[in-house]
Amino acid sequence: MAQCGQTQTAVITVKKALEHLGRHFSAYMKPDSITMTTLSGLCKQDVVCIFGTGDYGRSLGLRLLQAGYEVVYGSRDPKNSALLPKGAKVMTHEEAAQTARVIFVAVHREHYDFLTSLSLALEGKVLVDISNNLSRGLYPQSNAEYLSTLVPGAVVVKAFNTISAWALQSGGLDANRQVLICGNNPDAKQAVVDIAHSLGLTALDRGSLRAASELEDIPLQLFPMWRLPFRIAVGLLAVFFIYVLIHDVIYKWVMEKKDISFRIMVSLANKAFPMVALVMLALCYLPGIMAAFLQLYNGTKYRRFPNWLDRWMLCRKQLGLLALAFAFLHVLYTFAIPIRYYVYHRRVTFTSTIIKENKTYEFENIMAWRSDSYLAMGMLGFALFVLLGITSLPSVSNSLNWREFSCIQSKLGHLTLLLCTAHAFLYGWDKFLKASSYKWWMPPGYMVSLVVPCVVLVLKLFLITPCMDRTITRIRQGWERSAKAGMPHKEERSSQPLIL
View (cartoon, rainbow, N blue to C red):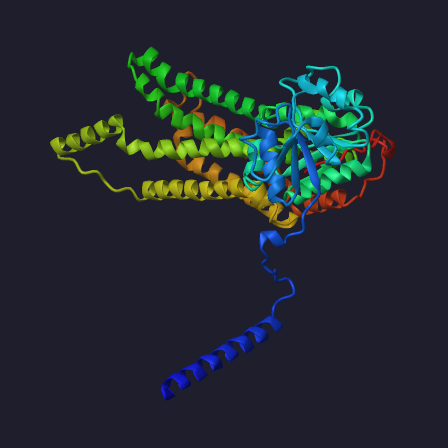
């Protein structure tokens, strides 16, 4: 009994000590600590109505329920509600419209006609049009504007049409999180903005309802910023591949009657890919250099660049990512070289020939330096190339300030171009001195690919000299050269912002 009493006393002492420790710890909790609560303890949101029980309506309703809203569906067949999220109510359209102020119209434009019979029930309601069309220019006016003419007593807001059902289901973590909104009533737009924020999404006001047609065209666009870079990539690949095909394969067949067409699949491709990658990397930095020279010539930053230069500068990110893709292909093809039958046959033939003729393959120190330097420049350049590609991702670039981002993309970018250019020079070594390298007066392919990178590096070297760099910095800070004869006046400025 005495031992039992001692045990109880010890347990009570431990409990008191733990309670004291808990109070002591809570006193030093950080002010930004979050108190965990159960879902039932959350403040319940307003009622939201959804017209339409399709995929999008179900996904939107599920997200609204998770955010604490009470969801009411308006359906033409309320009894058929087996697929709707648990916790939602289903009524007729007229009954559902009377329960909420904000109504999401998740039906196609072709089925808007039933809304005219609900004009009285929809009086003063906020109708959120989330519809899109199958193609651009399908109707003379936007779906949202058409909806506002059908139900003139309601306030129509265009929103959520750029957010897919999959994005709603994934919580916006792996998809687009931005909701574009337009409408004529500020209070109605604010109500939709509040709903978007409660779903963990960001909202961007695009103006009046006249912008609805622009918002409806956004989901129909197919890689608008990638079209020009893709065409450049395809054009360069075609030109370089045909060039090395003529230089290496066709020349051998015409002049020596030797068929080496088997090299098309790997050897020629592995020549064309790095050439395209190097030129496209240089094309990422060439427009910035051209813009700097234009600003030096104009003596101001307030003059508009030519349209083609503006478009070129806006697609530099896509050019760089495509260049990185070709660099990856070059690396993969290089890894496949040792296991090729052609390479294996040459190695065996060369080894057996040396053995039969009892020759010794002398070690050349210069060639060892050349091969190691060639590989080192390539590996370092590719590593920095990958770093540039990673920092161009929105999730990474958004975590960097402007100075960090510009340092990586500009300074490390030009260093990457320098290393890759050195890699190409070391690959060619002294081939440009040999007459046998010029077939049909055509220089080797690597020499052709070095033209643009060398021009970019030379011009950049000129711009970073102290006198030029100081002048460009002053111009970009707002300094303007005094007007001279033949120079543009301040009245000829353009208000269009310039991107460098």
